[in-house]
Image (cartoon, rainbow, N blue to C red; front, top):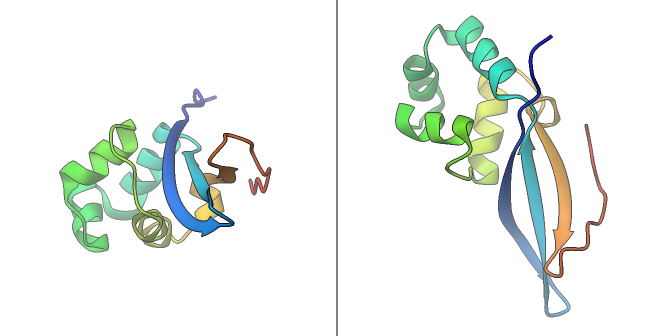
Length: 105
């Protein structure tokens, strides 16, 4: 069994009554995602080019050093022929760190 590795990315969604609602997007498993990319396109470079981002940016997302926008998270999922919920765990969080628990796994 592959180890489970998670990364957090906070994405600004909207303003509600003076407070921000954020989307926390958690990559479910870096290794499994890398395997899917290898099966789909063979290399990170060709996959990244195919979805319109740089290999460096894709590597940073996979390592958790960069936060993808919702658009990029969607492109990654679509490029793998997966639903975004297959790749990322999505949670809504308010600006005071209370989780709204709209978890879709």
